Length: 207
Length: 156
Image 1 (tube, rainbow over the protein chains, first blue to last red):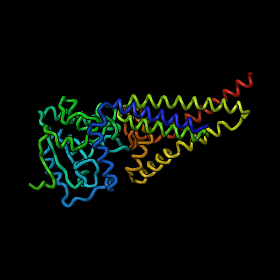
Image 2 (image 1 turned 45 degrees about the vertical axis):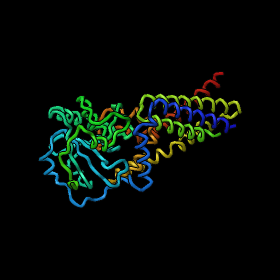
Image 3 (image 1 turned 180 degrees about the horizontal axis):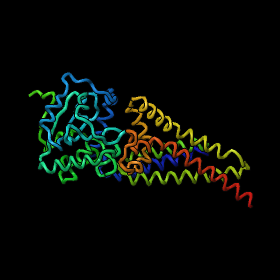
Image 4 (image 1 turned 180 degrees about the vertical axis):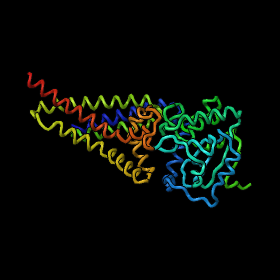
């Protein structure tokens, strides 16, 4: 008696899933599928375990602060990450502090730059736009402190943030599109953008 | 089929549909709303069937047990997550699983004001309350249904 009903519900569920996939429009061919595949492969290889490998050379935050301006993007590399070389992106807002959206428990927070010394490599990139727009992006980011963190939220969803989305959105609000708009954005998308110039890299990349 | 099993399967179907629809908050909320209505209709029909079979007692208790069993993973995840936080630990895996378990109602929680209470975001607190809220909603409706039926049968 129960089985045909369950099968019918399963069919209904499958139907709804297919409809959603169709609604996603072009989802199958998008970079999102590549990202999901990359994530699954990395998890299978034991990465994405939430830990950082300790760096050999500690972060010289004083030197970084001297070079940085509000609105600069800080990229972080953790070899145990699962979705690209750069595994985290945050926005520098001045005063040695950054805005970070990487925590389900606390949401979007303001932290000191020193918090990133556990990463193996840290880089600073600057968006090629006016200093005024970068400053406005930093100001917008400061206003997001406390906002919910959701790594599953799309770029069009303005109710929650995740690391690269917060950075991307801060500039998008100033009509500066740092990286092409697609469903999910990763720090590598920001690093690969032609709209950024490299300011600092620790440790300095060979060559 | 017991209410607990039906409720569990429906919740798993809702989770799959919600996870596929990630990033489309309005659509997710529509599915969650539809799911809640379907569960309430299931309760009404289960109560009706029970009365037809001449059983007048034990409905609320069964629903309460069923709802508790179904939402137990979420309750356990929220409990472990909070316990770890109060003991100065954070488990990304536990929090990630909790986020997936509460994904059906996340579009609602992310609309809460960006407030941090004792170091915890309001959305996280709401996510921790989700399994308990679902348990209380379903149980409350079952109790209400039983009371309404009893009252009507007494009047009839």
